[in-house]
Length: 114
Length: 115
Figure 1: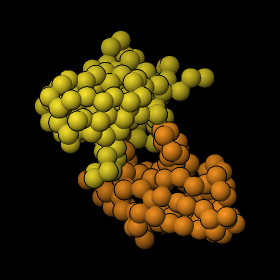
Figure 2: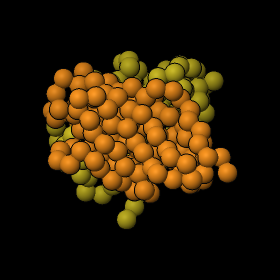
Figure 3: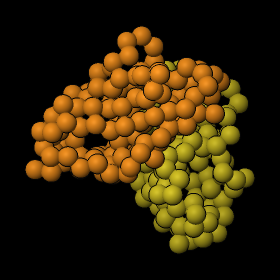
Figure 4: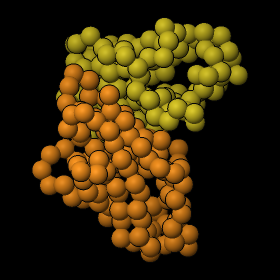
């Protein structure tokens, strides 16, 4: 079975500062990794995903993440935080198989200070 | 184009009552998923429909929960004899072919409160 660990529940950064949201996964088979963002009272929106190929993936709104197999990590970064980035961020994993369900981490709430 | 829609957006019910939650997936998407988002458990998979195949019900927490998908499109999640622990946001998602590499597109959710 797969699992995702997102340490901490809340991260606060200043506007313009680096955003780093950590995600570690556990999987016995090659994983597919996703970052979703949830704005208040909205559904989840895909930021980016890693399936195969280049391990550094770029997503929407200036976010990127790097798949590091040796560290079983898929951390999300953005060089400069914007006020509009304040939201909840979920890391998720799926694997090849009959059931393509997503297994999510607990989520991290990002606050951006002016 | 239209995204995934869910109704109602909010539902308040009394313990012991049955509730039905509806999901309209993106047109043309063959795969449909239900997830539950609660404070204690985070986001959990409930059930998965793919085309005409038998649904994967492995995430349903009890036999009070059931779901159906009519005509390969609209889905209804039914919770019988609701309990307070059923209070959560129920999210529906759809994808084009249901493979593990695809993006799942989520609806806004139904917020269920059981009193």
